[in-house]
Image (tube, one colour):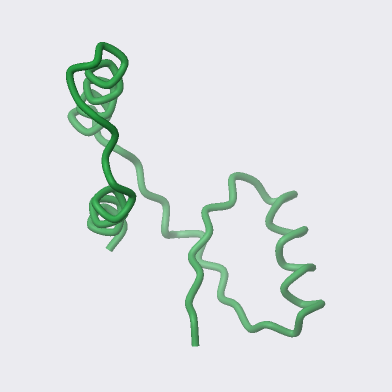
Length: 75
């Protein structure tokens, strides 16, 4: 079994995703309480990383490294 987590911005898009899942006869759970907001320090860190990359001060990160950070934020 594979679990897929998707952040859907509005109810219109949610309805379309649910319709597709229903057509494939896939089971799913809608958890509207799972909102995550980045705090000010996290946003500043993201913006600094972006600017450092643009300025050539850092290289792009491997996706696995980024994925681990994001999983830590949502789990």
